Image (cartoon, rainbow, N blue to C red; front, side, top):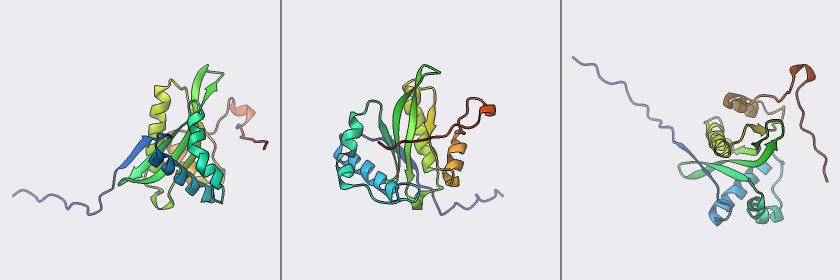
Amino acid sequence: PASSPPPQSKSVMTAIETYVADYADPDQAKTVTDLLNGYALDKFGNSGPLDDDVRSRLCVELGRIPGAFSVVATIGGEPVGLVNCFQGFSTFKCKPLINVHDVFVEPEHRRKGVTQAMMCRVSEVATSRGCCKLTLEVLSNNPNAMASYTKFGFKSYELDPKLGVAQFWEKTL
């Protein structure tokens, strides 16, 4: 007699879908702004909400920046993640690059592959633009993000290991 098939799992993982947001579409612009506000409220973000002025102008201003794009992740049609990116230029390679500026996943959807799915879409956009690499900054006290980025293939930036790891600095204007 034939053996019976193994029991089916009752929990079915919902597919993660991603898209590049259209800043001119009011619904998509609201999604980008709402998700960025979620990031701003996060302890690894700004630890406070976006100013109303920023919320009202964000996607208009992003739409004016050549090469800027945002990737949104959804699960079951609900927005759960955001990556904001900006195109730059590698002088050493003489090719464009993409800087991953903001990465946010709603807390209840972390550790489900959302960041990996969004990074795949970012990589597709970068490849279509002839980019030579992706760059990003990550807080040293955010091991979960560091592990996710490492899993995707990111590593600390260094030209020569003997000269040390590059640091990201800022000067407020």
